[in-house]
Length: 97
Image (cartoon, rainbow, N blue to C red):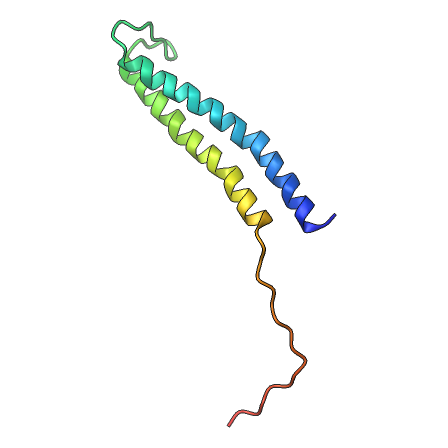
């Protein structure tokens, strides 16, 4: 396998394992933040009906989703970028003066 196909497989795996859950977590976090601001909303966060707990959970989910979405971007950048090639020269170096 060449380096390009390995990088593509790693990027697809990162998108499936991190990117998709990150997008779902982003939607859940945004929903929790929105529900904490609605007066009279039926909130249940691990047995608590406090809007502050829904806000905290929503913000934590949004932060984690941001990290999960950045992982496939970083994997794709580092595996699929073109590295500069080193110049190999067979010419001998001149003597130091």
